[in-house]
Amino acid sequence: MRHATRRALLGAATLAPLAAAAQEFPSRALTMVVGFPPGGQADLAARPVAAAMEKNLRQPVVVQNRPGGAGAIGNAFVARAPADGHTLLMALSSLAVIPEAERLWGRPAPYTVDQFAPIGLVNADPTMLAVPASAPWRTLADFVAAARARPGDIPYGSSGAYGTLHVAMEMFANAAGIRLLHVPFQGAGPAVTALLSGNIQALASAPGTLTQHVQQGRLRVLACWGAERAPAFPDVPTFMEAGFREVEFYIWAGLFAPAATPAPIQARLRESLRAAMADPDLNRAFEAAGAPPKYLDAPEFARFFAEDSARLVRAVQRIGRVE
Image 1 (cartoon, rainbow, N blue to C red):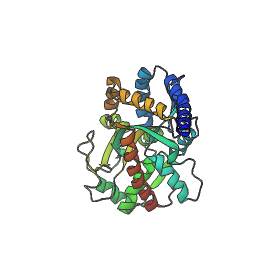
Image 2: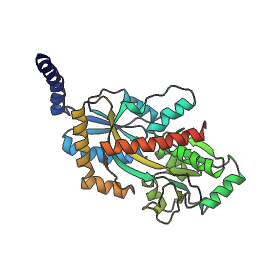
Image 3: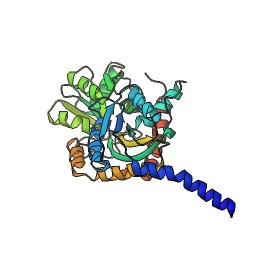
Image 4: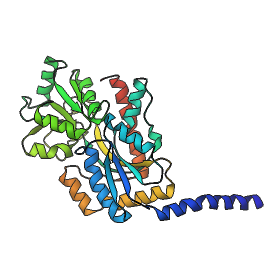
């Protein structure tokens, strides 16, 4: 009985600081890190989410862009951050791809996925293949024919080697038996700018970063990486419809905390994100960007993340070493 009492007292003593920390959280401004420049999918998701979370956390939530390495720099920064809930990561699906790509090249991974605790999914969009409106290709078949006639000649942009935009394009190129010229940028924002200026001729991107430019007649969308057509582009066929059965890719954005963040603080963050995703201002911002919200709480998001990551890791292994 004495041993049981001692264990109970020790357990209570361990839980007491965690409960106190949760009650005091947040004690200062929070930082939401985005591993890409402004204008890309992660940034477009982070800003409305941060603004909505501020309302219920009663502390500023500052979006901090830390671009580089297809998101690796920002991801690694949060992996090493103090696990007190004040540093968060708005990550894309490339979170799981980057460590696998580094292993493929025999390099040490900058972080591992088990260094992050999923808080919630905020959206998940099928990727779209966009070209300048001035390009001669009206259909996906036109693009594939041109790429086969000019191997390695058509430049496409990405957010960096093995980032979301790169893996999507290489998945397509591998299935179509074509070779394209990869031009990496620090994020989708600069890559879209290069596409608009004609410095590159193709880009895989989320609907939210393309919608405005398509509506203005500056870009044309040829195909969709989703299993179904994208609601924002109902007339655009999927790669599956074109016969590329294994070409499926989604750019999702989700919120993470360092894995060692105490459970009561993770619960508070989940509660805050749940409230944020119901905020009318956030929903208007997401809809205006052409990226409707898709919310999953931590348990469902963890399963979604594990399944999607396994599929992407297999895709990277199939693609192999590419620059």
